[in-house]
Image (cartoon, rainbow, N blue to C red; front, side):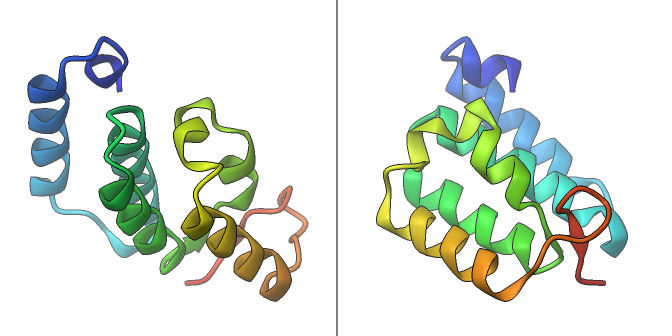
Length: 104
């Protein structure tokens, strides 16, 4: 994320590649996918960011982060982002863990 914030796309994407090369357990995949989405969002690669966000909700629901994370600011005005949040908000009531509900 640091490289993306510093507008160093080459270094940021190399970190993304390395993160995705590490074996990910199903229980934690959503964290990696979410961070990859944030990197792409900061780099203004909207389509890739949305694809990774969608992948992250396939393994866990992270709506509180979607709404508040400053790294996703570039996406909040996107219709695809609004649809994703609306769909999951309507279909997934908050759990006792502060709104994060695992789908595992």
